[in-house]
Image 1 (tube, rainbow, N blue to C red):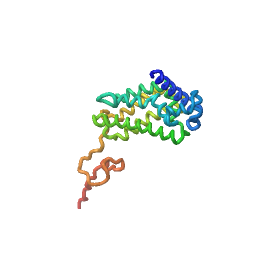
Image 2 (spheres, helix red, strand yellow; image 1 turned 180 degrees about the vertical axis):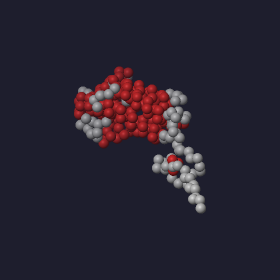
Image 3 (cartoon, rainbow, N blue to C red; image 1 turned 90 degrees about the vertical axis):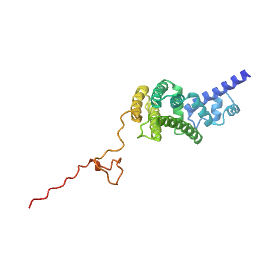
Length: 241
């Protein structure tokens, strides 16, 4: 029984290895189940015993490789830290260092970023990204609840900033043929981002204060409302008769 389980795990791993090679060499759309099965030295029946379709394989490849974003978020959520933003920064910096030297992570990221990926592949990637955004949201909700998230930034905005920053760093590093030090540049950028997200970094007040009561009118927080900056009017002296 134990041997049978080991054989099954080896077969599954062989399919994943072959799929990763075929996705990289042929592209996701052109890498058929037949090609993947032959590359693994197996039959189509063996493929379908372990996976429903290529999208299922793509999700399994992602889970096996465990890309940096998930490393970051699961570590923060699993910890009972009073400062989730600090924990997020440390985990993100470590994940970028891992991605910089791990070619397996780089390959899976390239596959998932392939613009020619089929509809089933896009749906699988969309599900994975949705799960990642949900994890980010959980971290930011925790930061909001304990007062470490800047009150001027919503949970949705913080989620977007984190997603775009990390995803953009990885994509640009690969697109530019690794022309900049990912971990070093990424850590510097993340420091700036965390400064913006934090409550204790001297966030500017939400509204400028006026010396006198304000009449009803436009939002005082709006950059278009400049009445506070206007000099007060002075009464003109009447000419002497």
